[in-house]
Image 1 (cartoon, one colour):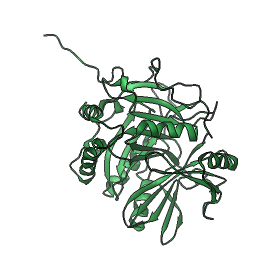
Image 2 (cartoon, helix red, strand yellow):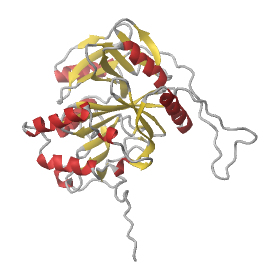
Image 3 (cartoon, helix red, strand yellow):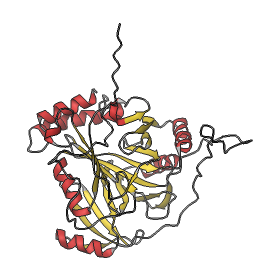
Image 4 (tube, one colour):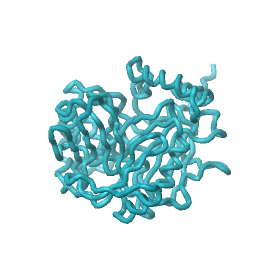
Length: 378
């Protein structure tokens, strides 16, 4: 009997480039080129509960008042996350760091907005924008720089016959994986292509990788991993990832930690305290990050990551089909929770959004729905 083995990862690595006429992945003359994500903002009703999880996840409190919580990593810079007290949990938007205040002014003039001063706790100036999906986007400059904090150090490894650790044991402590910095945010939109072009034009972001639904490449991409254009200076493979879907929503955010041991031991610390792992540990394909996904007490998906790709401006976008099996090079299969198909309130909301979206004028139509269902079952 002949055994036929199918490689689930065949053609999923996206070093393959664009075909003639496909999206170039960058705007020819963007208004500005942002340098990084500055912070993310959330609304939550219980700041005490949010802070307890944040410390277990590896954040440090930078500011705490009755109505606001600012969380930081160990790197110097602005807070990673700002949580304001609100009646219900919600993602409130993202702030991007401009090169300087001149860029903030240029963006304000191009979009018909005004430049405002940020609160004293943050410092600097900002222009408030709204992307085509309705998400709040701030571009900021001259914000206060918090000093660096002590961080965990990478462990010394014996790789194969390269033995650099002798007469010494390896004992990573089971403690929080200290967050170093904010890495990226993933957003879903019913108007994916319009949203993508808005970010490329106004913020100068460039695409690292495109994904398309199986057998629908001719209709264009449905997901993009987008990085900052810092010229010859490499930046994260993606600072923002955007995907087409039946609703406009936050998907997850990711925070860098020191190394695999730190990530794994930090995960055990979270499990010991009753927190829920969504998916992990594994290594992604697009971006190559070692990942570990968790649900916070309010249901938001957050990721520890380490060892991600860094690209300069010279690399053109890769193209690959989207599939559940193509989300990781190794690790456990993507869970129902991560894929958003668990029988819970969030998936019910998404199901209702599908029905609504299919009745409206947007990019999520019946052919796209069939592609999304094929991805979830692949």
